[in-house]
Amino acid sequence: MESRKKVLLKIFLSTLYLSAFTFGGGYVIVTLMKKKFVDEYHWIQEEEMLDLVAIAQSAPGAIAVNGAVVLGYKLSGMAGVLTAITATIIPPFVIISLISVCYDLFRSSFIVSQLLEGMQAGVGAVIAAVVWEMGAGIVHGKSVLSGAIMAGAFIAACVFQVNVVLIIIVCGLIGVIRSLVHGRREKR
Image (cartoon, rainbow, N blue to C red; front, side, top):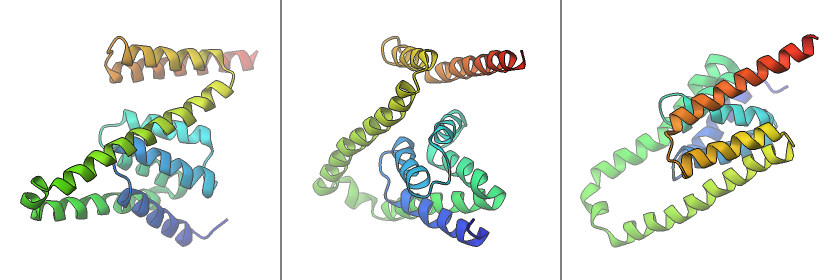
């Protein structure tokens, strides 16, 4: 196992890099966190990443910061939390500070507006990739109930315009009930 200082340094540099080059919000950073911490470093399992996303999405605040909190805590306790949060908030703070100084130039710039419009298309593609990868994990898990929950949540959000908070609460309750039933079956 790597020394604690090396782990904290890797957490800092990784979350700093991800935060600095992630445009489009929390869902984009979730994909990159998965690639870095699940696929590259093998620090967490894909199932844990799904749990991390659920926690980050359910907690108030930015998904990127919430994800950094959960990830940092899992990897290195409170030192990991402070390291990950610091690295995650530095790039947006610097970028927003620079933009606020140059706001008038950015507001009327054709190049900047076209750049941001192009980034929107890229963000859509990255979010679609996240949905595809994480949804494929559920489908390949061959759990009929998990597939039904995923499909039901999608239909509730996209077709019936049900509030996402309500969907998360219901899915969480289903997960708790499922765990309790599974636990009772194992005790028998």
